[in-house]
Amino acid sequence: MNRRRMYFSTTDYIIYGLAIWGVLVSLISNPFTLLLPILLIGGLFAYNRYLGNRARSSGYRPSGSARPSASRYEEARKKSKTVPFRVIPGNKDSEDEPPRYH
Image (cartoon, rainbow, N blue to C red; front, side, top):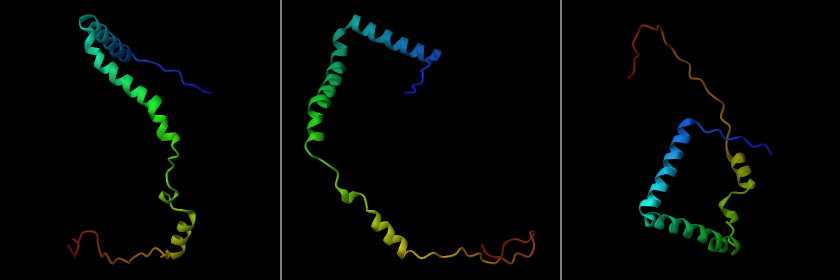
């Protein structure tokens, strides 16, 4: 498999460093400030891991009527009439005159 190597710019290193620094300072000063985000992310992960599989395994399948069949397209093509492109002849006398209709 062909994987691209990720390159980080100087700005990326600065942003990631500041983010890590902020998390560490927050943990040292008041460790309970990160308790709510950790619980929310953990709850979402647990829901997706354990309860999210029920919806996938319960036999839910999108109905086939949501997508039209190929026969409908063929009928529409048969009904449509091909009209040739028509060019309406113009009668512009000169380029300096203003248009007659506004």
